[in-house]
Image (cartoon, rainbow over all chains, first blue to last red; front, side, top):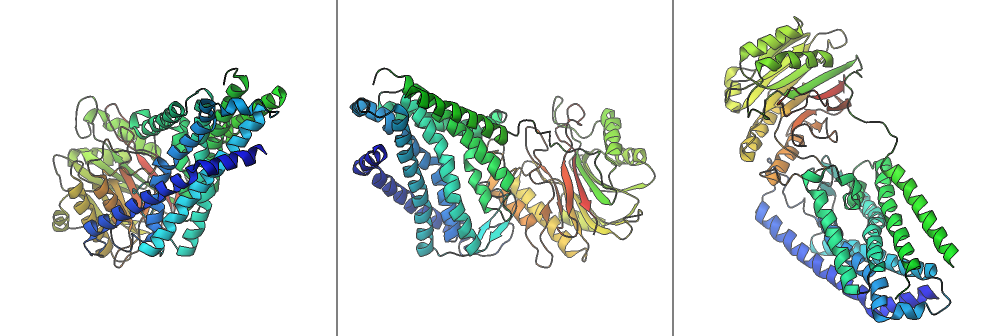
Length: 278
Length: 290
């Protein structure tokens, strides 16, 4: 009942539609950027002399992967943070949470219902970004084999060529993996949201914390901190695009991220359970 | 109602702890390269930039540090050693004679007061002509090396030891491209090894935007080195994913080999072996003999 109600509220809020529209705009801009970049760099030249830049490299699968990578790092976490902020702090702000708690529903059940709905949205948006990128890549550029080179967005440590069918399987596998990764910023936003009464403040704080952690993980001075920042482990799904998937390492990264997710959720729930004022 | 909530929190924290233990490999031993592990049937290749960049400013190998370097090379028990930043042929000869009579050497042309040297044990070195080295326009020692040690008798390798330009990505792109082309075209079908200080930092686990002057071109250079040639197969980065080799946490040194002909058994930098002021670790790769 609670879950159905939350789903209904989510649908009526139009947040999923707005998010998907934003993703579509993002992909359109990415496609424009890729096209102009390829034209500028190759000028039609396909010679591979001291360079990997040629038109066959920039096919629809390459576009979909790179667009998904950028979207995953910078766009999807914002939607995840927004959803977490809205779910608790937003309902606190509007008084809906107080209304819910007058009903015979445990706070734990309420928390888990909201978490389930937010998770569903994150999974949906992740799949939508992947699917839209692939479809756009197919019609605008055309698919083919997926070629990856070391040093470019750190996707691989050696030159890789995946056949189209294998590459598409890896895209399918990347969907749940990336969704799992996004649960970490989502649960962080739940934690921040459980302390806040304003959705705007909760979302702003969640996005800020995510961006700060992401930037710190990128700066060499903080190399010793990097393993302990969940943002470092989030792109672990990239390893799915290696010729031989290192499953133990992949699962280690997934375990690390899941640990952060559960820790944030435990703290968020503890806060929600103890709160007296809504 | 409170009890179920506390149970959820307890289980979540417990599960998080278990996942962290898995994710951070608590209790696992260190995976640092151990040069004492050595398969006798393998070919051990070492590359080491011996220059001084810290404390006193840039310099080639100091005379005071020769004994330190010699001791490390003896401990490594290598078959093929590529060294950069030696000052002159007298220094090369001191190191070679310190390693023993079984060792022979060939050097690059001297550029900016520095040399690259190839040292090989129980081997006959056929260096390329001076004219060819001059055409390559950089610090490269290039030779056919015929190993005749028991267990290695049948192996002849085309070996290039390089020290690429540190401050110009265009120069190192062109130079490394020329060396790769030379290896492909001038040594028949011999297995190739290209090793040395490339001055390209492409560690896939790191971000080096603050230090790379042209990451885009360096990416191209690296990929071009690994790509198949017009008449030769691709090279393989034998020390990929083994971590940084130089200050401050950059991977600048490489050993490229031919996969399937010279498979990598183990590889990595040997840490904590620098003399004071040095900024590179020795990089080691044990290759399976064909």
